[in-house]
Length: 487
Image (cartoon, rainbow, N blue to C red; front, top):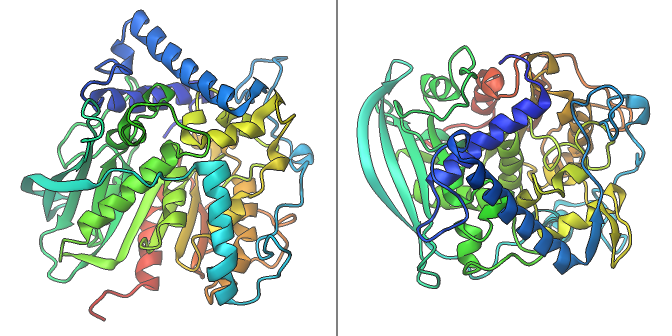
């Protein structure tokens, strides 16, 4: 992938995800126009922006926020204010992060039992309430059906590909229809149950067109899907937009809107990251019905915003055995407290607030009924989210800025967070990165030097904003760690 200026890249991602969301707009929804966003009229774009701004303003009203600080500018013109910082000398204004193995009452965690019964539930509660949001108790049930089965080839190997739909019960709000779309692709020439990687994306079967922003060709080399099938694995492609639209205007539709019967969210309720993660868990429910799938070797993968969602899915869903977290940045592996690249305030404005719980907006507040809050007030940090994955296989992946994986994502800070998560893995009998330095002084390894001996792994590849360049390393790492069900 070639280098892309940050604003251009964000626009491309927004167009693509909004395009999928528009094509998946629920029956009766008036939030999103149909068709690709680059074909929307000026009136349609204005209307989506207006609906998003109205929903954002409603959450500010609920929280008592009068003014939010603007997000950082990731690719500013010379002299432009509010530029993102990329100088390590100014990157750690809050160097002391929340304790991982100390409970809220001050009890130090020294056993796996204390972690499982006390500390882990404490962290889950805080992440749900303050960062990613709670899944409401009345979330509708999903009914699955296979609508198409084809035999074809991927990477020169025969596969059986299923188009799978998961229909949400909308009896409480008949005007909102939500149908999850998955593509389940498994080798046809392997008698034993196979490992499977679920990937956030488009839900496309082999041969289906993949949405691409004009002028941006696919990256070179074998795709993730080709690498997985060549290695004897299966894969699932999850159409995230069929679960929840990637725009604030869609929060009154999708699974979030259906659960709320078309009403606005309340501050503690889930955002899109948690909704996508919850949808992946429902995909696991379907995979549980397939004897061809090794149920103990199913993992989750995503890049960028979907890297955030993959990490959230792994943290909250214990049935996932492994995760590949690609270029996740702020809201994922990047520490909130780091002043480097993207900032908390970028996730509290109208562009990204819908990913998070409404409560997360408090931490971008300059003036409000509760005063001023910033990243240092967030009661949890990203190393604790990574720790919620322990002791399962957790691979944190990034590319390099020269190829388009921008410094905006804070690769060095994400490495610090991965190091800081290590004590939870060790406590539970797993191996961490093997780094002996404190997270405050740990230095990121050279590109393509993987720390892969443990159940917690790190590798920065030499590609761009993608996981394809780490996929073969990831597959070999998982295969070495997890034995097939028959063994």
